[in-house]
Image 1 (cartoon, rainbow, N blue to C red):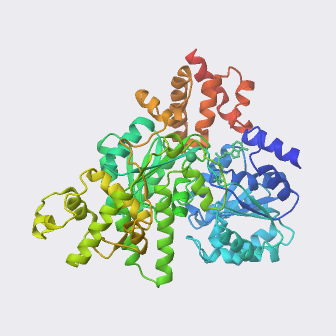
Image 2: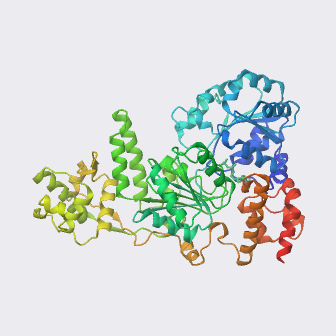
Length: 609
Ligand code: ADP
Ligand code: ZN
């Protein structure tokens, strides 16, 4: 069976070899076994059920909650010459009848179904009348009660096994936590399934976290120097943040569109479609955007506000670089983020235990932001994986300098203490920093704060540095934020610093946002990531191939990546093949695409010579 599978991989998909556990998984399912597959986004989950569906007799039935994307998924398969169809609520009766007829007459290799279809008796009867190769349950974490996207429809999937005991089932998810893992196996009755757990590392994503100074400018700089013309997602917390940022980027010549739940459905759909179908569109969005987006060539994900948890951050950044090419995950964070999130937690509904959970999530996120060690090591450790420094994150590329911040911490904490003890007052970071800097602002005068003994004792640092100190004290639990106005209060641990029992090491604020060596070299040439590292002579060719792809995609009404991925165009541009035979050796060029596009590409390459 393995050789059938390998042949299928090469002939249909145009890839040379399996990745990671793909081969073992496919072999296991082809032989009729059940499988539970945990693999990060971009790990190559789809092939794990698509190839067994092609190799085994009958139709592979794929259950997926991503109704809006089924059309694109089916288009992508058809472009490969795979006979695929879907049944969901967006179709009219005629369309549905046609797919059903194809299914019954054995004219389908893969059938995508929305989970609620399986609760309809007529669908079950339909499936009874055809031959099923396997059931694939995609986004299997939807069955987990504590997941973000719990769907009651998924619970019914446990009955598949009773009705079709001989049909193998494969459940797949990119959600990493152990608890979800166990729940999926339990609820889907996959007791006998073999578990395949891949590393959750995404080596092609470069993680970078920068302190905020002028966030939108910092973002624009990133786009201009490293991601000109690239597709990407920018996440903001609020709808207003989304609107303002999208407008700002558009004003500065970036092809940016907004996406949030407050926009009408038509605008949302149009903006999402542009992002999926065209090259180089930037979506500015709230986290409502992105679930199940399987666009492979998202070159960057930027967060302008602090995510609420490491899980969320990892899931959102994971949308970058599914195609394995270099991509950037960039997060800007500042003192205000911490204050705001603490406020939201304090004001959130639910009991104390719930608030403690939220606070623990935030603390883990802050620890990631303030670490002086490899970001990836810390991220993976969060998901229970051990690793060594990666060489592809900001702290690895530009090791963070630390400094002894004990005295600065003591000065700040004693200002908080004096205000509390001598004046019975609490203030936010801004006022306390003004006091330490000895600024006679109206508010300082009004409260007689220039009379405090701590007035003017902190002039060795600037405002930005002091804000960095406060941020890190908060992250280390040496200071806390309270109430609606974000006032600062001491914690138990503050006492240890004030009592000189504890040293405080702080990360030095970088003069300029950290950037990879590669990034700064590129900045002169202003190259987009998609053409980075391409030999000079291949760049022009790549751009022409991209233009050809865009035109072809428009003509066929499919997303550009359905024609060919960037990685494939890069390889064509570099190898400059002169015959169909040579072209067929390029990764991503299978039989069907060679037949459809081969001549056209060769003609385009010949023009260049
Ligand atoms: P996932 O569903 O796990 O997020 P996909 O199945 O979409 O990932 O695969 C991610 C990308 O990797 C796709 O562009 C896919 O075509 C590509 N890919 C998967 N397996 C291989 C392979 N063995 N060789 C080359 N490319 C692969
Ligand atoms: Zn690293």
